[in-house]
Image 1 (cartoon, rainbow, N blue to C red):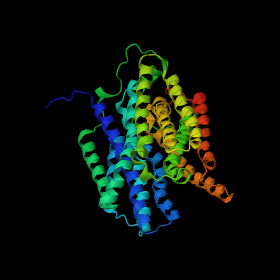
Image 2: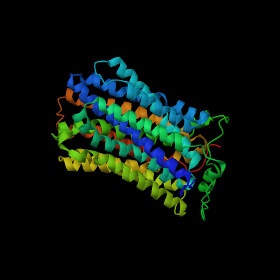
Image 3: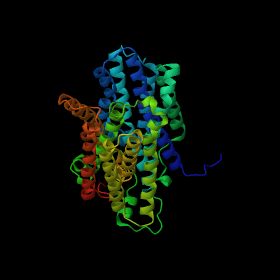
Image 4: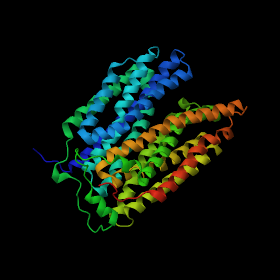
Length: 436
């Protein structure tokens, strides 16, 4: 047999990138297909919101169990089981807005299944990826989300128009099954010779040396230090920033189209490919952040701790100013530019807080990711609902929703959260391993 010319860990990272890509194609695809199907029969906004939010209720329920399961039976197996489950649901469930109970249960279970994915991915990457490659590996993996969202928004509207909403479910199921087969064939647990102990010439940073010594996930019989994790300030710094990241992301994802239609009198259909620019920007900046972080660490320019704090701070502060500037523009190009800058630099900041799971707890990365991603999912539920209440309160006060001034609060809340979170990360985060 011809030996692979690149390390197996590169293939694992590539497959996890495709994994997150397919997951977000599924999420965006359902939103597009269901909205079209629901509008065709006159489903009211409240019921549409209920169906669309069911995914996140299921998703938040399985984050911590996902980390526990990945720790106990292995992230590779958990990923496979999760993909098979949600792919089967997409392939078997009819997209009929009149069958509310079936749709509620199906979206709830798809959310539960996908909730296992990111804790499992962090467990797999902690097993395979050496410390000096973590930033760009995690950044590449998570950037698949944004590329999937961009591709879904570009491709699925045309698919729905020509073949109907149900075809989206078929495409999603095929993609999920295809990835499952590839993952089953090519993935594996790392042999001892491939565990992340790759040497780092001339790297003498104290926290890098400590991180290198702990790059392997704990044996499945090791007791999980739940109390220390819950009361750890560095973990809470990660949790706070994950909450803010997803608050800003979900508010823009869910309410920016409404801002375009009401504040700028422009429909998404009129925007063409420009509507995918913010998500494509996230894909680019996420990978730029990972490359910069690994360069700073391996070249001994900065320690792991300082690198994480620098990129997290730059990402969140620039994003905050872009959010505050967004309602000041009265043109589509200005609004798209501000949202693209905001989301792009948020993605850059993931080279700070998002990779930090594996710095502080390489043996329990899936567990910490489960805890922090629970906060991130709750942020989506809270942020989207709070924004609706803000706009309803403005409407009740006889404020004009077509006036961009009315929308300032919507965008200023995540902006202030970004500033607050960056300060918390500066004070309490660390790049050193704190859980043995």
